[in-house]
Amino acid sequence: MIPEFHEIPAKDIMDKRVEDLPLIEKDASIDSVLSILTVDDHVWVVESKESRKLVGIITEHDILNIFSPTKKVSYFGLPDKKSLHYETFEKAEQIMSGNPVRCEPDEKVEDALNKMVFHRIRRIPVVENDEIIGEITLHHLIGEFYAFIKTSIKK
Image (cartoon, rainbow, N blue to C red; front, side, top):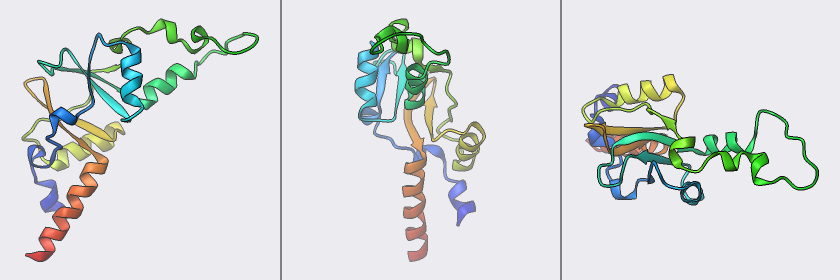
Protein backbone atom coordinates (compact mmCIF):
# COMPACT_ATOMS: atom_id res chain seq x y z
CA MET A 1 0.00 0.00 0.00
CA ILE A 2 2.81 2.40 0.78
CA PRO A 3 4.25 2.31 -2.78
CA GLU A 4 0.81 3.27 -4.18
CA PHE A 5 0.47 6.05 -1.62
CA HIS A 6 3.93 7.36 -2.58
CA GLU A 7 2.82 7.76 -6.20
CA ILE A 8 -0.01 10.20 -5.42
CA PRO A 9 0.74 13.73 -6.71
CA ALA A 10 1.20 16.39 -4.03
CA LYS A 11 -1.70 18.41 -5.48
CA ASP A 12 -4.06 15.51 -4.77
CA ILE A 13 -3.05 15.16 -1.13
CA MET A 14 -2.14 18.69 -0.03
CA ASP A 15 -4.32 20.80 2.21
CA LYS A 16 -5.96 22.99 -0.42
CA ARG A 17 -7.67 25.42 1.96
CA VAL A 18 -5.36 28.30 1.07
CA GLU A 19 -7.63 30.77 2.86
CA ASP A 20 -7.01 28.82 6.10
CA LEU A 21 -3.22 28.71 5.75
CA PRO A 22 -1.33 30.81 8.29
CA LEU A 23 -0.03 33.55 5.98
CA ILE A 24 1.55 36.87 6.83
CA GLU A 25 3.13 39.57 4.73
CA LYS A 26 6.90 40.02 5.05
CA ASP A 27 6.55 43.57 6.39
CA ALA A 28 4.02 42.56 9.08
CA SER A 29 4.88 43.48 12.66
CA ILE A 30 6.29 41.02 15.17
CA ASP A 31 3.10 41.47 17.17
CA SER A 32 1.12 40.13 14.20
CA VAL A 33 3.48 37.16 13.88
CA LEU A 34 3.18 36.32 17.57
CA SER A 35 -0.60 36.62 17.35
CA ILE A 36 -0.70 33.93 14.65
CA LEU A 37 1.79 31.72 16.48
CA THR A 38 -0.49 31.58 19.51
CA VAL A 39 -2.88 29.54 17.31
CA ASP A 40 -0.59 27.82 14.75
CA ASP A 41 2.90 26.39 15.15
CA HIS A 42 4.12 28.11 11.98
CA VAL A 43 3.34 30.96 9.62
CA TRP A 44 4.21 31.21 5.92
CA VAL A 45 5.70 34.57 4.98
CA VAL A 46 4.56 35.97 1.61
CA GLU A 47 5.41 39.09 -0.40
CA SER A 48 1.76 40.11 -0.22
CA LYS A 49 -1.49 38.29 0.45
CA GLU A 50 -2.67 39.16 -3.05
CA SER A 51 0.29 37.52 -4.79
CA ARG A 52 1.00 34.82 -2.17
CA LYS A 53 4.61 34.67 -3.40
CA LEU A 54 6.33 32.58 -0.74
CA VAL A 55 9.49 34.12 0.72
CA GLY A 56 9.88 32.38 4.09
CA ILE A 57 8.51 30.61 7.13
CA ILE A 58 8.49 31.41 10.84
CA THR A 59 8.12 28.53 13.27
CA GLU A 60 7.87 28.26 17.02
CA HIS A 61 11.55 27.28 16.93
CA ASP A 62 12.48 30.64 15.37
CA ILE A 63 10.72 32.41 18.26
CA LEU A 64 12.44 30.14 20.77
CA ASN A 65 15.78 31.31 19.38
CA ILE A 66 14.77 34.91 20.09
CA PHE A 67 13.71 34.10 23.64
CA SER A 68 16.86 32.04 24.31
CA PRO A 69 19.81 34.26 23.48
CA THR A 70 23.08 32.44 22.92
CA LYS A 71 24.95 34.97 25.05
CA LYS A 72 24.18 35.43 28.70
CA VAL A 73 22.75 38.83 29.38
CA SER A 74 23.93 40.56 32.51
CA TYR A 75 21.17 42.46 34.27
CA PHE A 76 19.60 42.95 37.65
CA GLY A 77 15.88 42.50 38.22
CA LEU A 78 13.35 41.46 35.63
CA PRO A 79 14.46 41.05 32.01
CA ASP A 80 13.52 43.79 29.60
CA LYS A 81 12.66 43.51 25.91
CA LYS A 82 16.26 44.16 24.94
CA SER A 83 17.51 41.15 26.88
CA LEU A 84 15.18 38.99 24.78
CA HIS A 85 16.44 40.61 21.55
CA TYR A 86 12.87 41.77 20.94
CA GLU A 87 13.89 45.28 19.90
CA THR A 88 16.22 43.92 17.23
CA PHE A 89 13.28 42.59 15.24
CA GLU A 90 10.46 44.71 13.90
CA LYS A 91 9.14 42.81 10.89
CA ALA A 92 8.37 39.24 9.93
CA GLU A 93 11.11 39.16 7.29
CA GLN A 94 13.74 39.84 9.99
CA ILE A 95 13.04 36.60 11.85
CA MET A 96 11.83 34.29 9.08
CA SER A 97 13.81 31.45 7.61
CA GLY A 98 14.07 32.43 3.98
CA ASN A 99 13.74 30.21 0.93
CA PRO A 100 11.91 27.32 2.61
CA VAL A 101 12.07 23.81 1.22
CA ARG A 102 9.09 23.39 -1.09
CA CYS A 103 7.47 21.00 -3.50
CA GLU A 104 5.63 21.39 -6.79
CA PRO A 105 2.01 20.26 -7.28
CA ASP A 106 3.00 17.41 -9.65
CA GLU A 107 5.70 15.98 -7.39
CA LYS A 108 4.86 12.64 -5.84
CA VAL A 109 4.15 12.17 -2.14
CA GLU A 110 7.37 10.15 -1.97
CA ASP A 111 9.39 13.18 -3.13
CA ALA A 112 7.71 15.47 -0.59
CA LEU A 113 8.33 12.93 2.19
CA ASN A 114 11.97 12.53 1.19
CA LYS A 115 12.45 16.30 1.39
CA MET A 116 10.72 16.42 4.77
CA VAL A 117 12.91 13.63 6.16
CA PHE A 118 16.16 14.94 4.64
CA HIS A 119 15.61 18.51 5.89
CA ARG A 120 14.02 17.38 9.18
CA ILE A 121 10.87 19.46 8.68
CA ARG A 122 7.25 18.71 9.60
CA ARG A 123 5.58 20.73 6.87
CA ILE A 124 6.26 21.61 3.27
CA PRO A 125 4.54 24.24 1.13
CA VAL A 126 3.18 23.27 -2.26
CA VAL A 127 4.22 26.06 -4.59
CA GLU A 128 3.30 26.85 -8.20
CA ASN A 129 4.99 29.78 -9.98
CA ASP A 130 6.51 30.81 -6.61
CA GLU A 131 3.02 31.18 -5.07
CA ILE A 132 1.86 29.00 -2.20
CA ILE A 133 -1.19 26.98 -3.22
CA GLY A 134 -1.29 24.57 -0.28
CA GLU A 135 0.77 22.72 2.26
CA ILE A 136 1.52 19.20 3.34
CA THR A 137 2.07 18.64 7.05
CA LEU A 138 3.07 15.47 8.82
CA HIS A 139 -0.27 15.47 10.63
CA HIS A 140 -2.12 15.89 7.34
CA LEU A 141 -0.14 13.03 5.76
CA ILE A 142 -1.05 10.68 8.59
CA GLY A 143 -4.74 11.46 8.09
CA GLU A 144 -4.49 11.03 4.31
CA PHE A 145 -2.64 7.72 4.66
CA TYR A 146 -5.26 6.45 7.10
CA ALA A 147 -8.02 7.40 4.63
CA PHE A 148 -6.04 5.77 1.80
CA ILE A 149 -5.75 2.50 3.77
CA LYS A 150 -9.45 2.49 4.61
CA THR A 151 -10.39 3.09 0.97
CA SER A 152 -7.94 0.43 -0.28
CA ILE A 153 -9.28 -2.19 2.13
CA LYS A 154 -12.85 -1.65 0.88
CA LYS A 155 -11.80 -2.35 -2.74
